[in-house]
Image (cartoon, rainbow, N blue to C red):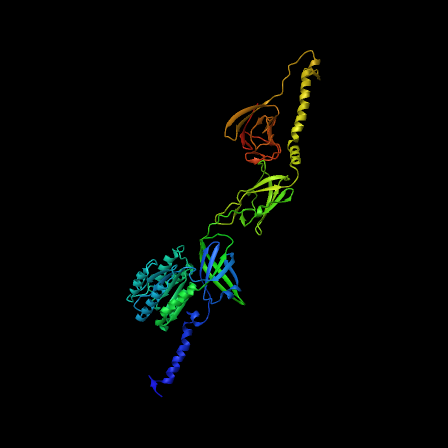
Length: 582
């Protein structure tokens, strides 16, 4: 049996077979799809909140198989709702391709010939909605095509490529492309991919390091596909390229020099034949930060876990006005109502954000509010019984949970309760009982006054009290001492008036003309408050009004002594107490 270089022919054949068996395992880590080990990839995701679109590659399934799968997804802390999925159809979406070609001296002529053949075919078969850009990075990285050139211009640029450059600044070139493509996120077509064709030689030349570009790829959301000739001597470099591709959710394809054009075509076919899944978030809120998108796709007992870190900073405007669901405000009790918002809202648990008015424009006093985030249910409790009538419900600071913070639309409702007539009588009795008492007392005092006056007054003579008419000698009697109260009044128009009152008892202030001091102000009750002048000073009392009386901004609930400079506020009027002159 013959020998070749000290080895039998049979031994050489056996060695060759062994190498063929071992070779796939050497490159299996870079080329799982070509070796037959399927590895699904979340190749790309686009967030335009609340919409999220994801692209799944390497999942060779029919639409019927996809239809029976289960889908779950989260974006940061938020759960996403599955909207639907479909196989991407030809001509449905465009792709912006950026081809990066290594033109350093290490590239063989046979490799460059296959690469040019692949580029020409890719440009010729380019769809109308696609874009074709070309960079060479043998030496300083340079864009040869931007994507807007004609077919003739593109072919000329491809033919001009040569392998005479001195070094391979791959990481600098990837950094430049990511910066450019990343700045065109909103330019159509929005789906962007990078295809790197290189031989795996001298990657570390240039200013950008491997770790820096690896980190940048992880944040870019741009898949980087690799095509390279198989070469065991450059395994370490190709391993690094494979890691970069997988970190970007893409893959590296390896083959012989003559297969490079076919590998480029297979890469494009993988890109355009992916499965698209669409999701929806609960609102268009974005944090303008990096967030983790995590998918779980159930296929029988197998769960495919896919994830990607994204910059979430795009959203769709939401001008939909939130409102009460079905415009329904329900009566719960004689002093409470309930309703449900048609979407999640903010600030619904703050009592000051609600205003309820009756048909006369009077504001009802509110006591409490409860709001449940789950179900968006709200209940309002009033201070007093609500009577039959039509009411309006206004929302001062309740908004939806969107980037626009749209205010909830005001609502009108009818409340079926007790008759308002009984309510007015009861309210009048509660509010004006003191008027009846004062009127009765005034009548008694008036009668007594006229009686005493008619009888010549009351005098004391020799230690005895008697009417003046019974005394022949009339005495000069001293009247009771009056007090002069000084006030500065500022009405709702801003007009200021300083006034003095000779008070022998009380000053009534309100809306009615029977008051000593009255204003045309709907915010005042007919008799709103009273100032009583005594030997100990002046005291103010609120007359159980709905809108209240305030001294220096503090509501008065019981009689309070006035001090010089105190500011009294009632309705839209302001009165400054200047003191008493004896």
